[in-house]
Picture 1 (cartoon, rainbow, N blue to C red):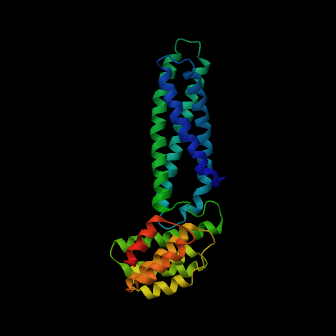
Picture 2 (cartoon, helix red, strand yellow):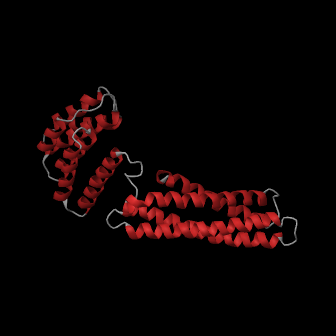
Picture 3 (cartoon, rainbow, N blue to C red):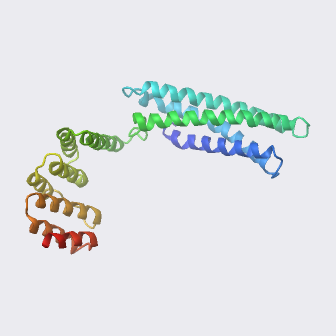
Length: 273
């Protein structure tokens, strides 16, 4: 059930917000369908909140065990439970409104539902905000939600890449190169990762010949235009860094025969001058 948490919580969010909007509109008296629509949506939101909390509880174990993530998990969980409580209260008030629908007090009950609904919207926002922080700030659940080992590998690769960019931005080129070299060693069959490491040899280590040697070992998938352009461009950059402009132009011309591209052709023309 934990794997369904991201899908379920989005239903809770949408049902709550739209339901509260309809309840506020219904206080004006028009259109006539606003009130029954609000009741339906808010009752569904209350039910969805219960499923959201249960699925979140089922999902939090592995996430909570990640170093440093426990406080964020607990805070998100607390706001989720507050949201459930608020929506159950809203649902109870809506049911009361149904029972008193022919009573003069029904407008008062619906007004109470609207106020309680606004409180629930605040809780939904806080739960969502803390959930987003957990996912995007702590990688909570990223790579482990499905239980597929390949997801964890993608998480690891993303970590290598993002940390390398951070090191490069901070002026620590050697550390960036080490990370991308480690990524290439960890994913030897991935041509994109191998080209990334070759680019790092050129950019971070200032080793154009090493970059060319690395690129020579890359096997590109047939028919992939983007990767062919990337490979040829990296080769051209390395050759140009070595002062071999003709070789740089030739590397681009080889791919242009299969995949014509005006921008690459302009670079070829500039190299041939």
